[in-house]
Length: 88
Image (tube, rainbow, N blue to C red; front, side, top):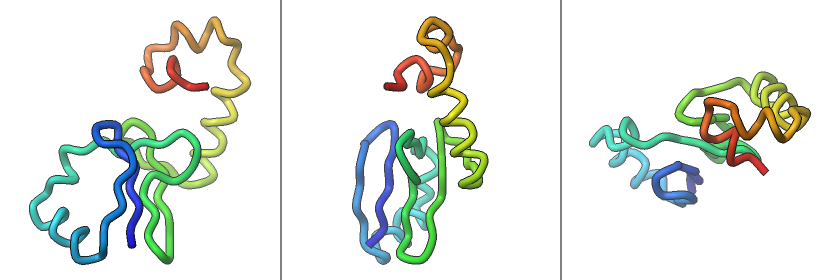
């Protein structure tokens, strides 16, 4: 089972076979993988960290999330990145 988080569809759980079909049809290209509270793509053996369609290493992801958490609310509200403005 593969767990995906996308901006468009939220949480999706797909089998390995479904994942292969998704990749074959390149549907994933149109999806924006995104998750602020953990990895956005979780395979059985590894995880991928994505924010607004951009892939991060776990270390860089954690650093970015901590920077946003430490940001004063007023700065979050005017940040040009939509996900930062919506970050809780």
